[in-house]
Image 1: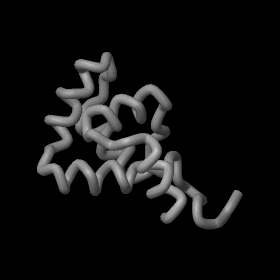
Image 2 (image 1 turned 90 degrees about the horizontal axis):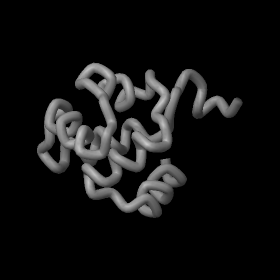
Image 3 (image 1 turned 90 degrees about the vertical axis):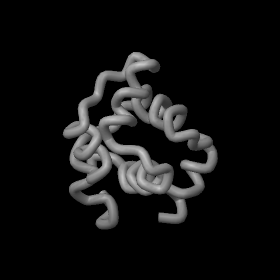
Image 4 (image 1 turned 45 degrees about the horizontal axis):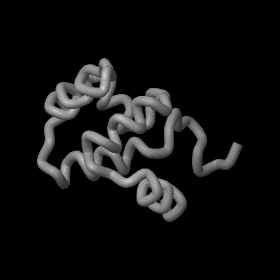
Length: 82
């Protein structure tokens, strides 16, 4: 395992947090909006995703991109930069 990724359950959590905060959305609001995509996360789980302590499933990532209006290709580019 690359040293950069040790002890991380996902790579996009920090980006998700930054985008969420830049849009002025609370964790609770994001979780509420995720329900429209049939994704059930609570604020604590979202916190754990944002701090790379919880595995982010692919369908959750897709829904988060929809809720936060993130283009998947842009997310990929941000992940490569970091």
